[in-house]
Length: 330
Image (cartoon, rainbow, N blue to C red):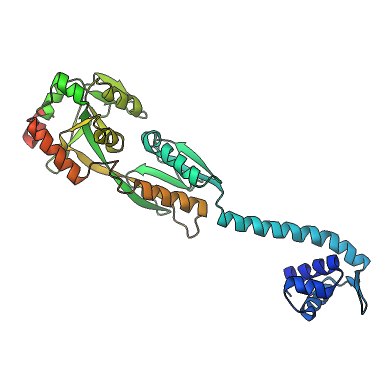
């Protein structure tokens, strides 16, 4: 016996006072509706209806059962409708974590666009430079620099991270464009002090196939990426910035990249999410939206063609970033 169908037939027959009318609403024959109600009575061990050739009416047991069955069936129908609506009209909360630099410069604007598209979805952004345990902290999506070795997660590469030395055209016109990396020691530069370690992060350059690190004695030191970007844009000095921070300003002409031959590209931004078969629709929608917006987005890194064009421009200024000059500077 299908208990749900039997209770549904019983409630409809009780409300309509007719097995035939109940059968019409259910889209079955009167014989089928009557059989379902009879099976329900057998299952409960009570008689629910008084039956005559002309009408049916509830017994006392039937009236008691109807009060509970009608309310329960209504709640069940509402639950089915709510679940179906949740699939058709996405709603609920999505938790996403990202580092400060990306959250401030790119992610908040994208999440605002996503919310306009899906107003029923609530987005909770957890800004943290530490690697979070997505599963333990019940986080749906995470964006991080570099690969995280966790078999419970799927990692999707979005864009490379380049460390770009750059300055404003006005600063270079006023103080001169450095001819080689060693010239950085005589010019004003900015430095970033790591929030966790408290140490000033050295600049990094490619020398052949090796990464060389160089301590820069910054004229301006900060532990905030926004403040460092502002300092460079205000002409306080030359900075080495992450590509997803610097490139929009480079493309707008506000910053000029330097020493692209020695630019490092060791890491990438990855989108992480739980490795499970059935991600909620709201999570899948945000995952696919961020992938579409960020994956290979040329506004967030310098492509090979952009690098080649900038290198030709830099050569016209006599800029050098050879291995010999780099080793001498380090």
